[in-house]
Image 1 (cartoon, rainbow, N blue to C red):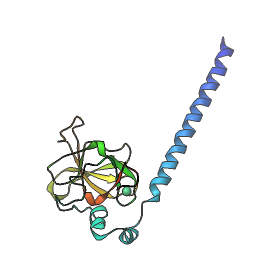
Image 2 (cartoon, rainbow, N blue to C red):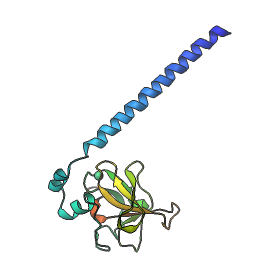
Image 3 (cartoon, rainbow, N blue to C red):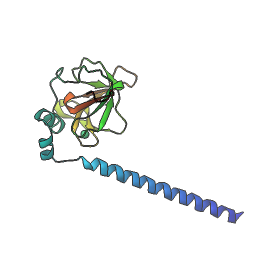
Length: 167
Ligand SMILES: [Zn+2]
């Protein structure tokens, strides 16, 4: 009886070890990828137009009702304007009168959330996980079943239509 327990234990140990190695490996890959686009302000100053730099790198806000994607409802993917990482699907976009493109959910793992206490309010800032670019804020007053409203600066976004080649 005693002998038959050992192979089982050994097997379990090997499995646990394999799992451990796998998770370390995937974390490492993610951090390398994420680190790729964490660039300095002078890098971004060269790459971005002045309005995109002000919003994405200096946490600015575009003037409401002016953004290219505010009332834009084509099918496709919205990505980060700076690093081109996909962030939102057009199916999550909804018509909002707040003046900025609004989404009820983001593509999983693409957004980082940080508490923002500037301008005398407590808000949740949304940041591109890949390049640290400021996107906007997320609020709990969304009209759809997620209850969320990702309020995103148009200038922080790029759009790719699902129709080939069209943008
Ligand atoms: Zn980005």
